[in-house]
Image 1 (tube, rainbow, N blue to C red):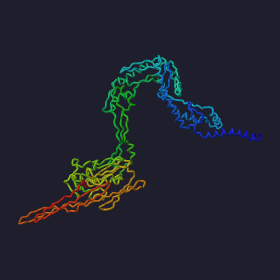
Image 2: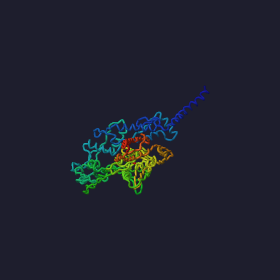
Image 3: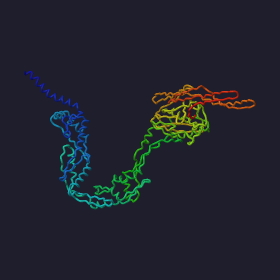
Image 4: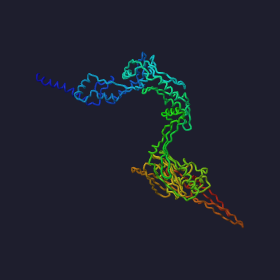
Length: 614
């Protein structure tokens, strides 16, 4: 037994010593949490991490702000809304205090603090702050409402345009300096009881002379009427309106009663001017400098409105000087598309340009030039779709378009059809389409001619009619496309200015009659995309021929004229492009019958519907 005790007792004592040390070491691993038995304003927060602690304090702050506080002033209960004095808890400071509680940095001291945490709470005050200026104003108001003989520093009384003095007098007042800590202590706890506020005697800081000086200034500031002007807009403030905008404030150094205009009241008085003074913002845009050959940003212009912060000083200067007040303006609403947004689209450079040629001085050249003028300077915004027909409208003689050759019944004819008005504008359409093609913008709609003309790239051209065919593309870039058109007596050019993201386009062509054109788009990262479209051209339909026959019978001659068209069997030619288009032509049929000297010719005309202008 003795031997057992000799080894058991030291072992037991050692265990009693080691066990707490081990437990403390384990607890110490949780250094990012609050120690055991720590409270804030009586709320247990032990074991909380920083974010949980912040949430607990925020919830407690909401409780303090939502619960009114009751104070007693000379026997009268007064209720204070904590939000009226902007009650706040310094959350960061309290969190830091809680996280460092029972942690001194000394292992020995912290070990004994840890032992104490099992039996002794560690409470942290949730001190609050308030807006002392707002609280002083509330206490002064309570003094005037409750106390029989409240102290008064003096003021002015405005009645219409009349201004009277209210002279200073001594009296009772809530002792603000003594009341402040009492109010803060009462607001710092959720278990609130009514607190009696101390009352003292106060002598006014102002004299009757100070009030008289304030009356004199108020009368000067309400002398009128005052004329306000902004551009063509004019408004008048009467003396009574000027007086109604006056406010006073007691100043301590030196003691005086300051008189000034209330900006909010002046804003109400001049509000009727706003519709005539305010201007809407103007978006930024782009313009083309022909001489410098560049696209410039035209800056945005913010909307303008009355500067109500400067208005009181402007009104005061004008009233004192007896002059007209020029209403101060300030930038108001920002433009929806600002200068900065426009500049962010840059650099705006020439993305593509294409030129086609024609002989000088033909009637079709007039139409080409006119359509180029209508499309010039157009801006296509990111994501927008642009249509030549929608932009320029129908080609009419009223707009100056003239008759010129057009494809009618499978061949170029002029100039008896309404289709001939605007003939030749397909040359502009082809030039425009190639600017789209090499600018790497999305081809929404185009249709080549049914007949091939050597002045155009084979298979890479477009015709134009009303309302179809049309040339339409979509700006699939993040910048604008600025369309610049120009022409000479023998050529027309379309240039696209923008920023297509660095895409480069080239063309490949294969086949005759039926031709496949490929647009090869190379992206900045080296990716290549190929777009194929196929078109089949038709042969021109022959022009009808005229034959004159003279027959003599019994000395009498008769002459007959027969118009004969070369016939082909009825056929249909279908060509496909992107988007697909189908054209159907039925050939003419001619039957000739001759009896003796009489020749009879019957012709059935071909039927072809065409609205294109070559």
